[in-house]
Length: 250
Image (tube, rainbow, N blue to C red):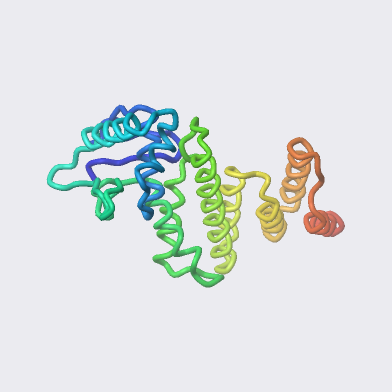
C-alpha cells in the first residue's frame, strides 16, 4: 500500500515511505473512523465527540474541515478511501487502499482465537504470529479520551489473548522454548497477568529450569505487593510450593 497508518506504539502516517504531518485531532479522528468503521455514526455524534463546545453550525463546519484535511493528506491516486453512508454519515470505505495497523492486527489474530483449542493450522499460526508483530505498543499513546482508553484496553487484551493462544499451540506440539517465548512476550505487555505467570512458571519447571521457575514466582510476588498490595493467588502459591518441595535433580 502506498499509504500506511500506524496507531499502535509510535503513531505515524507514511505516504510512499515518508511521514505525513497530521494534527493530534486529525489523527484521533482518523483512528475513530477506522476503529468504528462498521458503524455509521450520525454527524451530531461525531461533532459531540470531537467538537463538544461548538454550536451546531460551527460544529458541522469543523467536521467538514477535518474531513477535507484528511482527504488531502491521504491522497490515493485513482481511488477513494473515504465515502458517505446512505444516510450521509462519513465513514472509511470498506475497500480503502490504505494499510491500517489496527485493522491488520485484528484481522490476523481473531481467526486463531476462534479456532478450537490445541494445535493451530499452519495458516492460522502464521497469521497469528504476523499479527502480533503489528502490536508495537498501546493504541494512541499520549491520548486520554474515554473512547481511546476503552479501545486501548480492548486491543491490549486481544494481544494478550493472541500470545496465550500461541503458548497453547506450542505446548500442544511440544515446543516449550517457543511457548516460553510467547509467555514472556505476553508478560512484557502485562506482567500482572497471573494466569500467564502460572503457565510460564510451569514451563520453566517442566523444562528443567527449577531455579528460573522460583525466580519468576518471586518477581510476580514482589510486583503484586508493590503494585496492588496483594499476594499471589492460591493456585499460584500451591504451584510454587509443589515446585519448592520437590528435590532438584543433581
